[in-house]
Image 1 (cartoon, rainbow, N blue to C red):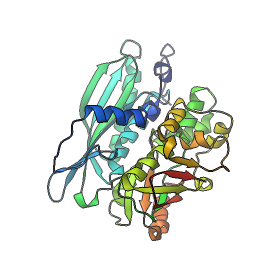
Image 2 (cartoon, helix red, strand yellow; image 1 turned 180 degrees about the vertical axis):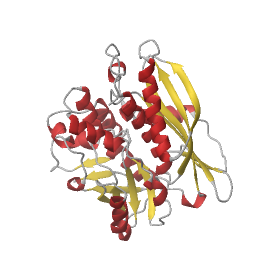
Image 3 (cartoon, rainbow, N blue to C red; image 1 turned 180 degrees about the horizontal axis):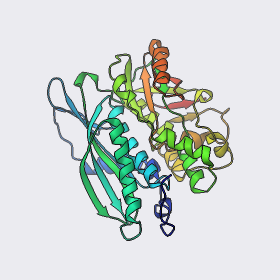
Image 4 (tube, rainbow, N blue to C red; image 1 turned 45 degrees about the horizontal axis):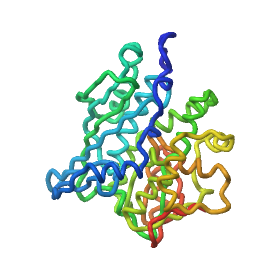
Length: 351
């Protein structure tokens, strides 16, 4: 961890929320966008706001499309270097979730200049820069403001072949659902803020949230991968439901197959949860069917906001085994098939 001065306040104490748990609830966001965004037809805008996808995609020519996204939030951890790393990894994920390859980033920085020492802010920026360096891209500029709460993130641009875009609304009935990372990031971060997360739990949290989803660029080459999205602030239920609504299918998830980060289930069982869980459940409750055999803490786990979470893959069932082999080879140890997609009105069933 990075050392800070004794008089410096902890990062999480300066923010009312942390990580992707800061996101506006999906039902509220949809209402705001419906009221504020004008309709228009742009033939080269291949992906816009219509399906709540991870990034916008604009066709440049026959062989290239620009992928553009922005993501920023308040601290999920107190270590400034780790905060920067997590925020940058999370922002890059949106490019990978479209099947793209990032090429450049701009830093988005809002800091309480009179509260945080300069070395703390520098450590945040250095953390983000280290992730971009690992991804092979420059941070080519950005924008900064003096704000009440610390905020950091990136605007990222990437490239993808127009024929290889992986949208979240192209899933098919009969597809298998694969999740690439373990769940429970929000619960671990809530435990951290309460002083209930030990060293091993913290290392688990950092490893998961700083693991780049660069595998998405490889998945773009697989025709058997029909749809792709990343699981972040709306939790597994929310992002699966987005895929179902966009694709006109329903998901059947086997709770017993869900991969959990170590300590996440025991912490949830003891009552640790994030404030975003109830908000996420409210937003999707009308299209979710939770089986009677689930444990009492299942709802908190299923709606847990994931910061820099894994990729949710909808693929042809015969490709499940080779894709899981690829994912495990590439270091995604928690990758697992978690369910299937079937014909029917859009909803998510968990049993």
